[in-house]
Amino acid sequence: MSTLERTYGDGKRPPPVKVLSGQLRAAGIRGAADSGEGYMIRAGRGRSLRVSLVWMQGTVLEVQLDRNTVLLMDETGTFAVQGVNNIPKGKPCLLPGKYVMVMGVVQAVSPEPVIRAVKMADLSEFAALHRQMWKLEVEELQQIGSEKTSHLSEGRS
Image (cartoon, rainbow, N blue to C red; front, side, top):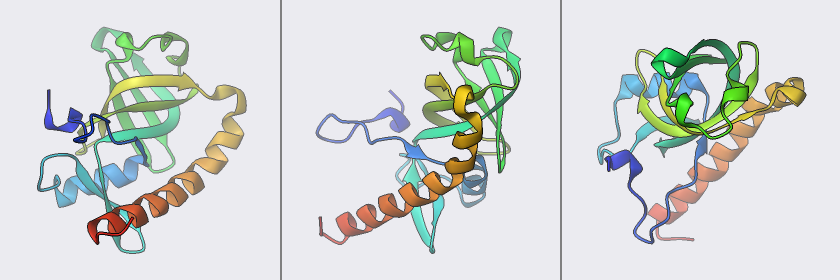
């Protein structure tokens, strides 16, 4: 098991963090977190947030089933998703133009983010709404997540 797949001491994996591809790309410039359990991204207001399991959304640009990979694009750039042939019910998502969500483990952040998929879902039916809300959702949840992390590190709950 890689360090990115380790669970908390209570046996639970940390929840996925909603991120934009541009945030992961920028994390590559700063490097991996010292502990080896994720990458540090900027979460707004000068705060950082460690991520390893992520939730991302984007439009399918290219499908390479022979390489077990799909290329997606969100509003901040492109990112690759690997392991798509192993996702139950993932095949309907794998058409160019579909708007999808992917949950997975960060494999690389530079030069382009690479995620190993754990789950995929087709969000195309309400794509306009999902696209419009996605960046706001990411920003709000990262703000909440970074506040919880700072409280825990300061001994507060």
